[in-house]
Structures are given as structure tokens and as C-alpha cells.
Image (cartoon, rainbow, N blue to C red; front, side, top):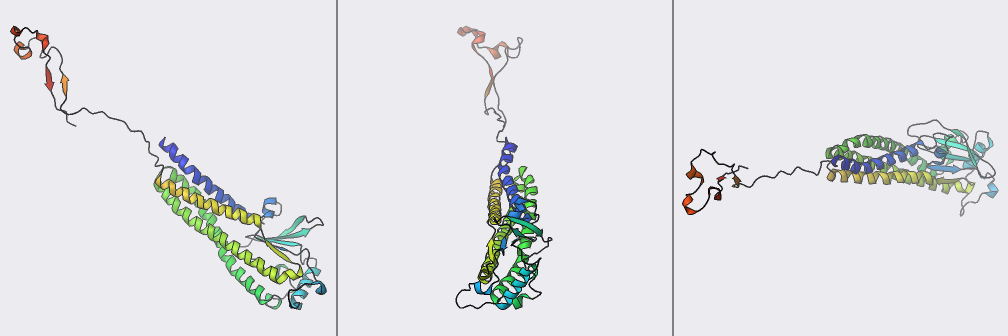
Length: 316
């Protein structure tokens, strides 16, 4: 029962670790394949340019802002080419995908960029903005946002790689926890490190792309270019964080409980010291001295009236 109880105690954190690993794998697979519906729907950031407005007279700018002619000219040039602005752009961890929309709003991905370590979405390069630089096109607000995005994206990418490696290690090391609490202790340490990196990656991703959406909306919304975050991606990501926290908690519990040793012990009954045992009859055989066995018969008692005992001391 001990080993079986230990296995039952380890099953819960192992299952939670596997669930966290699956969530991280889904997050990292977003936009890697245009043929998979699951991967197509998983993205951190989306830019919708399907309703791009290049008519200066129809552009609605807030307050007394003037139209940025350089930015408008660059966007007009990109939209006028066959390989220019697509209807939407979805950004994943490794790459981005682009595509078109039909009249009913159905999206069709036509191209996904190659995978790249430390990937970040650069609209100047992706949109081919008339071979100009971002410093000449975008306002300072958007340029600062893109610079921050480029720098933080490197840390975010590294966090995801470390997190998924630690999750895989946690799962493998977790098998040792079935046999001892020491295994649980080591797994708990790995799980704690994994939780730190998963939480850091999720927090960084959420904050980074929320900031990027705000920057795009403030600068490009007057041109009817909309930006949004992927709710499905964030849901899977934070669900993975929840699984990670729960698995760490149950790994810690397994260190303190479910030792794996059997609770049944063999009971040994020992005799009380200074007890008496009946000796065999007849005592000392029939040829023994009668006076050592029986009292005088003159008192009216028979030889069997007295039963001899020997005094023994049992060493414990």
C-alpha cells in the first residue's frame, strides 16, 4: 500500500506538469503552420489593415492633429503594390503570418515568414514602406514603442525556451519522486524555477503586446489600421501558468507526505520477565526422590496435590 499511495500522491503534480507542458507547446507553435486551424488562431498580436484608408480627406484625426504626409505616403505606396499591405498580420513567437479576407470576413493565410530566433514584428520591413526608415516615417511615440518591443522580445523569447526546457526536465525528474521524498525535493526545486520563468514569460508577453497594441492604435487608428491581442493565445498561456503553480504546490506537498513506506508492522509479543512455566510431569522422572516431589503422605494429601513449578527469568 505504501508504494501505491506514493504513486497516487505523485500522479496529481505529474498530470499538472504535463498540462503545463502542453500549454507552452501550443503557445510556441502559434503561427508556425497555416494549415493547422489551432495554430492559425494562436497569436500574440494582430494588425488588421483590411480597411486601410488612404484618402486624406476621409482621415479623422483627433483634435488639431495634422496628417503625417510621410507616413501616409509610405502606407499608400505599400498598399498600391501587389506584395504590399495584406488584410491582416498575425504575430507569433517565432514568426508572423499574413493573409486576405473575403467579403464575409473569412480569413485565409497566404504566407508565413520563416522561423527566427528572437523574432519581432517590424512593420517597416514587413510592409515594405517605400524603402524608408522608421525614424523618417513613424512619430516618436511609435518609434520608442518599436525599439522597446525589439529589445524586450529577446528576453521574452529566451524565457519561453528556458521555461519549456525546465518543464520537460520537471516531468522527467518527477519519476524519481515515485520512489523517495528526495526525488520530490529535487523536482520541487526544478518546478519552482520553471514557474518563475513561465510567469515571467507570460507577464512580459502580456505587457509587451498590450503596449504595442496601444502604440499602433494611437498612431495608425486614424488610417483605419486596427491592432488587437490574441485572446486565445493569452488564455492558453495563463492557463499554463496556473497549471505550473498548481504542480509546484503539489510537488511540495509530496515532499512532506506519502513517504512510500508500508504502514503495517509485524507485532512481536514478548513474555513478561519473571514469569512461571509449568514443568513436565513427572518431574525428574519416576526415579526421583519422592520427598523432593511430594510432601509427607501423613497429612492426607496425595502425591498429585502439589504441582511443581520452576522459577525462570526471561531476558528481554
